[in-house]
Length: 519
Image 1 (spheres, one colour):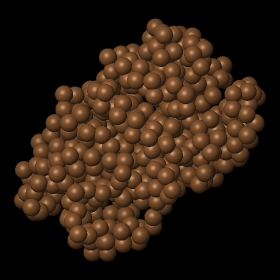
Image 2: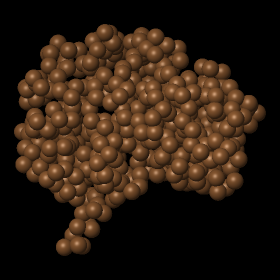
Image 3: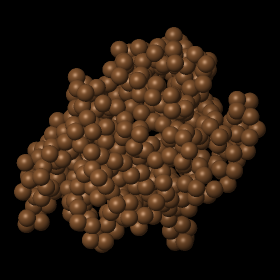
Image 4: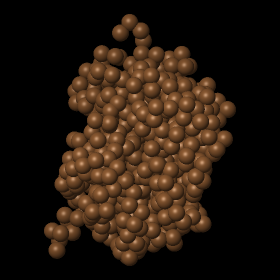
């Protein structure tokens, strides 16, 4: 290389282990949002950077090693997030496999990690994973900029960088003072967009990435090219099961708890619309808006949707976003959202039992008629991806059945249910540690779909029972006559056939097998 490469952002997933046979055809391949953001931010600060997305290119560990050896970066930064909230932990499996491989190959440069798992458990991670030299304890923007200003990345220099955890000369784990995150006033400047040009592609930009099946209306041809971006970071709420606010971490505790860092930051609508324009000009129409709370602050989403509506006059954009279920009740807002090209809303209904919902969601939906909200969204011409959770604290077979019955009644075109997981960084995780509740023994155990999955038990249900109920409900919903009639009416017979073929793939579950074998 003629020009020194300051940092290589490496993206490795564990999709084959995390999704089993679903990974071959049905699971999404998400653009690495945070690698793109960090790369663009470091370039804006004068650094030479590249992205190696081993997930999208399906590279082996040896191919990764050869590519890194050729590029010869001063620093390798593993960016370990993913398309679901649990992916920061589950993708640690693939990332650690590669980092160990690099060390075994006598790779001499420093290796660092950024992502939700290391943000939650910096000390534990460094104690367990000797192939990592240091980690970032929040989003890492300012910490990484300061690291790249160093002449070398030895311990003597790292001790002065806020927002890091590392091993000192005596092999002790040191967690430095916290670093600030990029404030809203600096978002357009210090996180200036996405380094789209650094992503690999086969024929056209972003064609190695694919949307979730439902987002593409269950049509394989509509899945690529695919992009995802954010208009805001973080969330102002404090749900016990969630860990997304770890990016905002502002302390150096050994165990981070996301609900302690609830905060939202926004890019300006004018700035973000330029990112949408870039994607549209590259031919990308299938786009995910990653924000956990996109339709929350009208100051930001209304002008953005108005600008998007101008870009979407031919109604060819196919986008989806998350929303709280109690912020989408107004028909005029839904009409604007639909004009903007947002054809799907992903709504966290979580539970059909109000008491269970309120226990974990800090007052969500207290005065909301879920059925009425879904009706209004449908009337606006917007489809719903409904998210539910089985096995929340307080759940039993009766409340889980109540949740499933509600989902059948709502009959949304998208349906997704997870077994409740004590994700590192969530309050559920810290509570589990304090109460000596058995947690997964490996990274794959935190995946919602893997063979190793171990969800949380409740007072009345064992972990294997919850997982079994979840897997059975997935098949029941996606083969339900009313649901399939809806899909055929909206998207055609081919979509129905694609769904039915997907339901033929059985997820193998270790804890269910162990229960069967023991009895």
